[in-house]
Length: 139
Image (cartoon, rainbow, N blue to C red):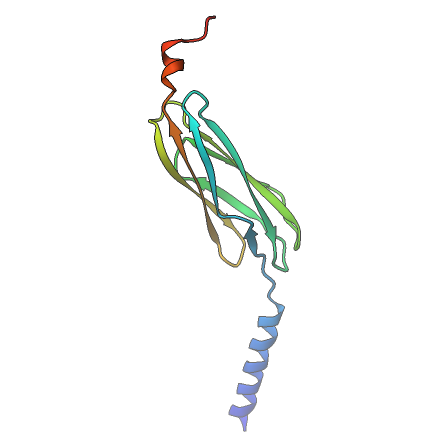
């Protein structure tokens, strides 16, 4: 009898604690943004990753880490309430980089159910057109 009573109490305790836990959950509109094709003479590109807290607790982004020094991310430092939205702005600077295709990743750490979310930017930086190399602008 005691064993059955203890089992019943354990099951009820687990059920109540599972229902009481609330989680933040970050959901991005897109996890990959194509920055397109652009020339080395205009090497800076910007984009925005929009997200919503679809969980039932406040969302906190604890850090955002980029894969390369050519990429910078700006993110909200305040709480994001359940149902509210936010943005992570990403700037790619290809200055001094070789032309060609690139793929960079951004890791977003938060108190979301999934602790880390990976975002991607990609694009193709082309060489400066020959016509601009041969005829530089007059100062």
